[in-house]
Image 1 (spheres, rainbow, N blue to C red):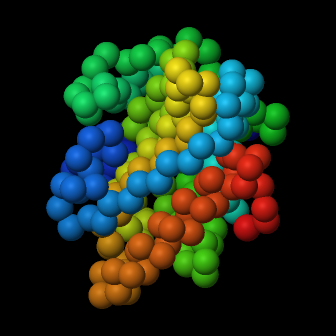
Image 2: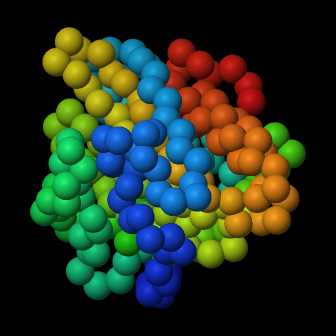
Length: 216
């Protein structure tokens, strides 16, 4: 896929990076519904590296049944994004991208500042809108990133995908999110937002973990 020209859209919510806040579940951004799940997906360096490669090549979204289009990496020197420490405080970027990477079909890997259009259906509910990569973490034992909504989505907010290879050799996959309903139906029926998120979490887990590789 040819690299697109970066356009400077801004995300459509104020609490950028809030998926990294330790108290997200207790104090979510205003009018949003928080969610968090963690799963042990195996152990060892090989499992961590395989899952990391899958995560950074958009496998969570693709294998969840979502289509990617109009993938636009940040142009020029790679945008450093927003990075956070364990307490959710902003810190310097953990890694500066020197060279854009691509997967087997030519799609650019996840990179700070990349904008992508996601579309599809999850449990009968529509997924259609642009997302911005808010930050990317690539460390020896931690890899992940966050996506924020830009426009056109039925809910507004952010979701983060993190892989951790712990000292006990276990590999864990954690997804955190907060969703503020925007479409009328989602505003009047909050249960739809929660059901949509549960279905997405299940699909993300099945996409990344060989332990849960049953069909969606």
